[in-house]
Length: 86
Image (tube, rainbow, N blue to C red; front, side, top):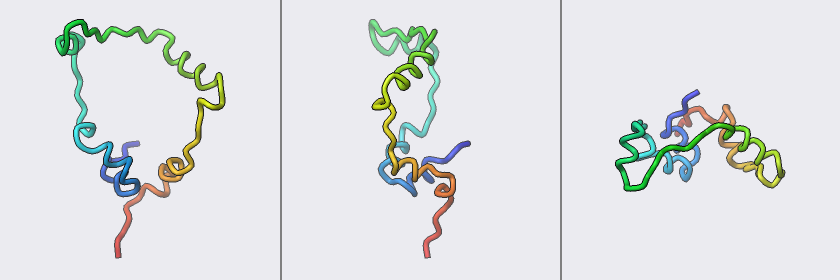
């Protein structure tokens, strides 16, 4: 499901404004192009086992899974419909 940044901004200005601007445009670079961005930079990063490590970190301690009640409320599907101003 795609929710436009402008719609998110209508419901949560602080979160929405952080999604607008440069973040609203996707950029895909080849590995060689990213290495040219800076000397010594390497985009090489093995992802083998990365998803399992991430899940293990969240599972290791409940403190790693804080719940943001306001964000949960904002993201509920029934809240993501256009607001009509009177």
